Image (cartoon, rainbow, N blue to C red; front, side, top):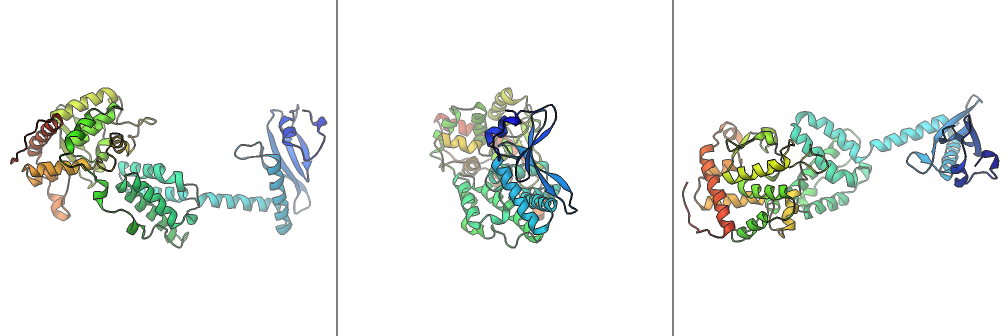
Length: 413
């Protein structure tokens, strides 16, 4: 509509929306010093006419017209104009009032948990490997920011953190829950030592959460293992996930080591997988001998994902690995929720290999367990030849279990 057709003020939103542009920019009074500014392009915005301290008149932009973010409807613009006029009566400066409001808005944005967490991350990542930095910010973005990211960190209560962390536990990722709790506790410590918080709401929560690693490493009994192995080999969904579960059951590696693995780490001709130190729990390079069955599986996987850097590239972003719950969710789909985890295959391997008389040092080396102290630093013996023989026996043994033709008998390596 043309502005000459306006019948009343303040203007209705239907009038505001339908006002037509003209050859030059014009302002149309809405009431009480509030104007709608219309450009020839059709862009509309709100301006407030006010008198400065020196008695001269000036214009103050309030925002665009509309219903989107950073836009104001007629009612919202009138309310904002009224708030500015009320504040002006107190301090005599409308511009100072708006600046104070913007400063308050900036302060509120800086007080969110996500802002504080990213500040903590920026400080800490300088001493981390690339893998650790990626896992840390990934865990925060996946689990914490969607829940608490936009909230003021001082307003999140200890009980809310407790409920959130228990929810993570109930999803079966106890170890990840512990890491997330530790991160968030440190994030609040940053606020506390810099004078922005007086207490840490995560302090003491560990006493009421699961802390025993065994809780996260659920595994079936040896008697239940054969049907599990058959279920994995018949996994009906994603082929790469089926191969991943099969490799986890065979190699006794940590799920994160496999999920984040890169093709460049593998020598399939030589039957070796070298996990770089930055991706290992103890920050030591780890060499994994590959049984012939695993080499065949990896060749099959390469046909699917060999064009990417990662063995298990993400669906939406192929530069990042699959979700850290991908294998756990697959086991749940197979009916093993609470009975088997990816990490639990390590316990199964250790049990079977020990029961069949293999050398404890060889088993511990395969599991990448390192002794504490100086002995662990200087003992670089990896028993590669012995572990190659041991893990080929283990892969063959699993095949026999899956096929149901095992004759149990102990042996010595």
